[in-house]
Structure formats: C-alpha cells, structure tokens
Length: 603
Image (cartoon, rainbow, N blue to C red):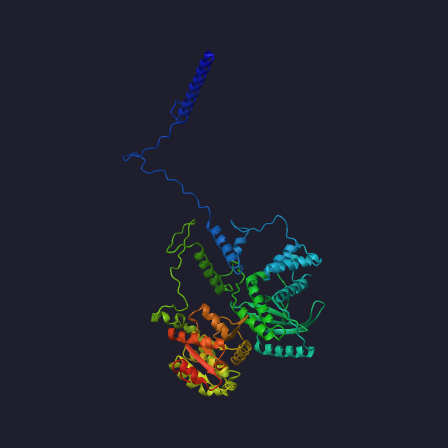
C-alpha cells in the first residue's frame, strides 16, 4: 500500500516539474528573451556634423473630420430647429452638385393621413387638434384620394376647396375648445345692424388694408367673406380672410391666414399652395391664430370684428417674416431684393452661433478649417434700473438713450398731423385744449400733476396725447412710453379706438390697448390704454417700470381697491425714479386730497 502512495507522489511531482518548465518557456518566448525574440527597429540617429540628417521625419496631421461646409450645414439646421422653423434652411444645402448636402429620404411614401397631418401642423394648428381632425376625416371616409403632395397643393387642383374649408373648420375647433357656453338670443335684424355698423367702422379704420367683401352661399358656409391685407414688420404682406356667418354675432367669425398671392380683381385667391408654409412659418401663423381666438372669445356673443382686426393688425405688424432665400448667382448682391433682410438674417445667425459654440473670453482669428471659436459677451446691460440707491442707477437707462433719426421722424409726423389732421378742429374745441400750454409748463416743473375736470372735457382722450406731443416737440419722441389706466375694460378699448381715430391711424400703431386676455399693441405703440390690474401685474415683473416715461391714472375719484393700491406704489416709485411723470385725473372736486397725498402736487 505504501508503494502505491510513493508512486502516486512521484508521478504528481514529475507532472508539476513539467508544468513549471512549460510555463517558463512560454513566458520566455512571449517577453522576447529567446532566440526568436522580435527585435526593435533601429532609430535613425541624427548627427550634428556633415552628412547628418538634421531634419526629423514630419508626421502628417490628422485631417479634419468635419469640413467647413458640413459645419455650416449643421449650424443652419440647428438654427432652423431652434427658431421653430421661422428661419429657413438655406437652399445651398439642398444643391445636388454640392459635396455635402441635405437629402430627404423615406423608406415608404407618406400616406394621405400623414400628409394632411403634417400639412395642417405646418399651417400653425395645434398637433393634437390636427391628429384628431384627420382621424375623424378618415373615420368618416372624407380623406381626399391624392397620390402626392404636388397633386394636393396644385393651384388649379380639385383639392383647394377642401383645404380652405378644412382650415376654417380647424380654426372653429380652436375657438370652441377654449370657449364657454354662450346663450345669445338676438333677432336677425339686430345682428345685421351690428354687422353693418362694424363693417362701416372697419372700412374707415383700415381703409388701406381693406380689400373687399363678398357674399357666400354654399353648402359649407352661408354669410360674408371679408378680405384684409396687413404688412408685417419686415414688409411682407399677409392676407386675412374673415368669414362672418349669417347668425353673427351669435355665431363667431372664422379666419384664414395666408401670404399675399394671386388675385381675382381686387380679392385674393384663397388656397394652400406650395410656398405658403415657407413664406409664413408655422410659429408665426400660430401667434396670429392665438390672438384671434383670444379676441373672439373675449367678446363672446357680442360684436367683435373691430377688436379682432385691430388685434390682428397689431400682431402681424410685429412679426418678422423672413423672405425666401434665393440661389441665383447671376444677380449682383446689390440688386437682390431683401438685402436688408439678408443682413438681419446673417446677424441673427451669427448671434445664434455665438450662443451655441462660443467660450467666454476666447477670440480666434485662425483660418483653419477644423476649428472656429467665437467670443461671448461678458456683461449684458439691463433695461430697467437697479434696486441700489446710487443716483446713476436710479435713472431710467433706456430713457437716456436717444435715436435722433427716430426722434426727427416722430416730430415730422406730429407736425403733419397738427397741420392737416382730419380731426384737428374737433380736438381744439374741447375744454382740455385751453389748458394745453399750462399743462406743458406744469409737467416740466413737477413730477406729479393732478387734473380735475368735468366729464366730456377731454381729459381721457387728450391728456395722454398732449404728453406724447410735448416729447415729440422737444425732440424726445422716441423715448415716450405713456400708460393710461382705466377702471373698466370697455373704457380702455373704446378710448383707444377713439384716440387712434383722432391720430388718423388704426389701433395697434402709436396708440394701443391692453386688457385681460387681449392685447393690441406693437413695437410702434407709445400710448397704451389699459386696466389698472394690468399695471399692477406689470409692476410684479418690472419693479421700476424702467421703460415707462409717463403714467396717467384716470378716474381716481372712484376709489377702487386696485386704484388706491396703485397710488400707494406710485408714491413710493417716484422717490426712486425722479424721471417718471405721474398724472392723476379726477372728475370731482376732491382733487386736493390726492394732491396732499403726493406732497402738494399742483392741481
């Protein structure tokens, strides 16, 4: 038995030796220590003497992974996406002859369902609404049987009537989605009288923008269609078609928005064409539709056409519609239309690149293709004043910045209105005109002025205009921003309409109004009529009202909670802003009370 144990022990020991020998030989060969080891290549020595190779071998730099054309394409696509489609992608990125270009590819063609859904979203309608609407069309077997988007959008095609009616239906769904129950009992004669009165008012207010009206008697709609053409901030004309049903104002009006195109006589041709979504992007269309929904629902069951068109005029005037870019290299740069718009687009793109890729404090003048860096602004100035007690910071900064060309233009406009205004005589016959020069002298010497006058003397309509005209005459019209508060919404809108009429223009220009759920102002607005609650809400966001030059508080004798609270805030605000002018107006004889509250203000 012991012999077997010794034999097993000897064999195991022998096996262990062979295993260790195998491991050592393997490691010896792998480490390059044996006869088959791999020799390292000799490095060429450099010598300082004659015949020596003094120049080391140059290594070729790795080529750039992204060319300049590719980088430009990525930036333009990101800019297009960041602006919600408002800035188009340049046509050069779709050129088939370019080395790097954008190609649109899909494994299977779009179905009519998908095509209509994307088209309606491109026309500015909410995505969830378009999905439900197209689903309902498909369920009712009303989807048009077109084979391509080209066939669907053909100008003389059979589907234009369907597209126009569907756009009106989608806007109707937008209206009733946020519209409460409205029960209106009104005779047809009374509704016709309201419509005729509003139509006459709109023709006088929007004489240059009003294109015409026609009667429609079709299965889908019975009523009138009114056509308007408004100019955007960039000069692009936008057509607004308003369908007014026979049951108006019990049934609300509907609108259709499209770029200015072909016409039949004086009226434009309604339709959805190939370039529509490019000339007027979805984001801009949506802002117009939202403004229309808010205005119409704000006057549910009442006449709303004048307020609607005033609101749309203000919104469209503030839009910056980018022109379609051109790739015609045969035209000289100076002869291309929209050169100024192209410069603005380039500036926007440069600002976007700065915000996207730059690092603070880094400047680069390198012309290498693979690296471009941009500087970022270190400090951004605020428009409003700070909360510190430094006198230099308390002054309204924007008020001190003047634009001489704008001031001269506003002065010329006021001189023209003063000499040839259509309502010049009517304004001069009001009692307020007799104290115009006295008001100029008092407002120049005091920060707070209290005005008392009977109803109908012209306080509400004339005093804000006088304040604006004083600044225009002194060459500071560009710095004027006058707010006039009213205790009721109806007063704010009606007074704004009257004052705009006295200045021979439409609401939303120099004169506008802002009330709850409705705003009719633009970049040109310098006299704004609003409710007291709007000013209180604005004070929550803009503590010092840094962009306001005058605040006119009307009807202070009514002593509402909002008005009294606003007076408390204004008394504190004028101590921090010595440049702010406050005018208090009352129709009763208790003006001395408010004058004492503001430290002996003149009456």
